[in-house]
Length: 264
Image (cartoon, rainbow, N blue to C red; front, side, top):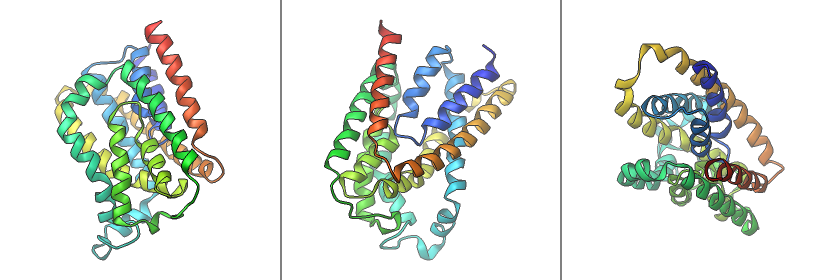
């Protein structure tokens, strides 16, 4: 298949799944394997299009990011501040740094993704079942300690297939945070943590990037940006009237299809 068409398809997959609780990593591994698009070049491409998805979040929440970066707002007791985001990032960043090589070497494969899809889906259903009372209805009501506790749930997403947004939104529900507020914090926190992770990965493999790949990478980047922005808008509206259950069931279907494709 033409590489630019592959770039378009993978850009759509990345943009549509990065911020939905369905695991973008799992989808990218499955789809990349289907197109036989693997190896170092594929790794560089996947990092590059993730940056497009990150840019979409920045544009969607640009007013909050600009307010956060004002010195007087760096460590407010409540609200969305740098301190809140750092507190949420710390657990996953620390564990991810310590286990990065192990995760990349042993956990990035179809079997682990299938397990992550199923267990992550069950976790989301569990969070919805015990979510009886909303204590925090707006992201600006979160305390730094509450953000840290949501960040502890984000550690689960280090297992491919579990989903970063799925783990943090479900974790927020368990802590009494509304779906919308948990999603807002999950998306805002995603920008620095993904930027750091993508930069780290990109610096390791950037030397393998060829000028011949630029058109393909540009197509994937722009596609991921546009689709990610649209998916964020849709998802936040969806959460105002629906639960995470439908995404959990979707994950189970994808897991079954993946198991059939790879092992039957």
